[in-house]
Amino acid sequence: MRALFRDANAAEALRATSPKIRLIFEEAGFGLETAKSNLEHGYFRAQDTAERERILRALFANIRAVGVKGEYCGAFDLWQFLDDVKTARPRDEIRSEARDKAPKQRQPAAPKPKRRSIQGRIGFALGLAVVVIVVLRYLASEGTAP
Image (tube, rainbow, N blue to C red):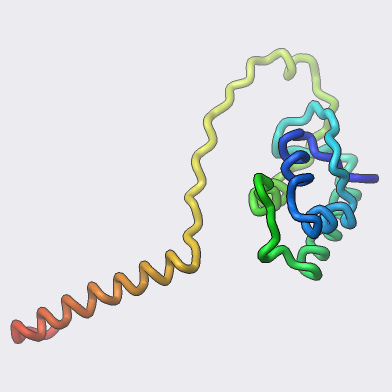
């Protein structure tokens, strides 16, 4: 069994990555083709759970063994893909007609805060340290101590 992408744009973006990234996915059991599915984003077929886990374990092992640092990913967002994989839930494809006919109300997803990079965190810490030093020197020059 091979894991296929449901999103044609994601499959195309993966095909445009560096050969090393493509090889990591292909050796884990991913196909670079797309497959049509009725499932919504964030869900997978419940009967595919065992094969999905096998393929994902192989993918994570390949990433650890080979590494992706410095590789060209282009439009393929590897970290978003891995986040989507981690948060996906199983869902049976058999649905009752009543649920299918019910109007679906989608609430907008709350925007995720962007993670700060290491450089951003270091810059913030250095800026804070400079402010604290300036305040302490000012207090010392005024003859007061904190």
